[in-house]
Amino acid sequence: MEIAALLVVNAVVTVLCFLALWLVSLRLKDVSFIDSWWALGLVVTAWVSYMNAPGSPHATALVWLCTIWGLRLGGYLLWRWRSHGVDRRYAAILGKAQARRGWSFAWAALVMVFALQAPLQWIVSLPVQFGAMGTLPSLGALAWCGIALSVTGILFETIGDWQLVRFRANPANAGKVLDHGLWRYTRHPNYFGDACVWWGLWLVAAEAGFGLWALPGPVLMTYLLTSLSGVPTVEGHLARSKPGYAAYVQRTSGFVPLPPKR
Image 1 (cartoon, rainbow, N blue to C red):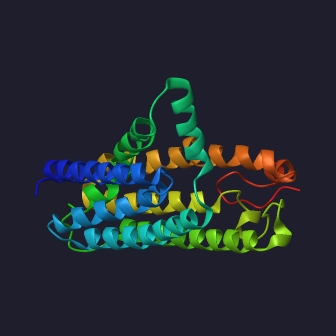
Image 2: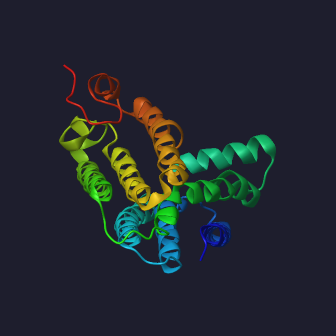
Image 3: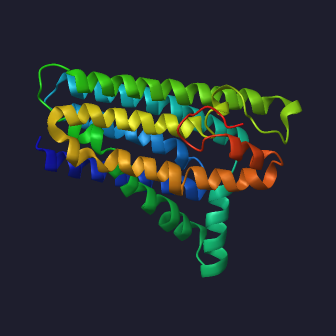
């Protein structure tokens, strides 16, 4: 399959999946599960790309790295949704659209969540789409660096999520700020890990010969994590709900892990 045809096929699959999930949200009256699909849908795109690609070590590395990352993160977010219920962020977004614009839940969910996230997911997935079309016979130094970076990112966010779950499970930590473990060096180890994964996948795709074409993927992912749907939505809530968070912000790096300031 030509790369242009693959991009179109993946776009169609992405749209159809989001439309199906929109119908599910209408029955549940909740869109919070879409966070888990953000990861799981990227796994679907990776496998569609892999099955329609000529086959190469780069394609194999990309599909398995994306699968390990996506299944771990998607499963965790699905568990969190089932455990904690409706996500306050989505409730606020849909509530404002319904109150200020008079939109129905169905229309607000379609426009504000599903129609917005589908193209973003397709763009983020560009490294696994373009990289799958590579034909090099073996992995080189750049690809191995990308693999190492992605594995580091997977481990980093997995450990960070595990530390957060343990911290929240202890009633004695209610109202406190998690400031030990990986959270001592960055306020968002999970988001930093995500960024590492996708920059690592981009390095693999870049060696396969599609670096510039796939570059919007990790750039968009990093922007979403640091400036739009990641850090800003979390930090505002924590600053309002946890008295010690302001001091934590002053001494702890916002994204890239660094030694804490005194």
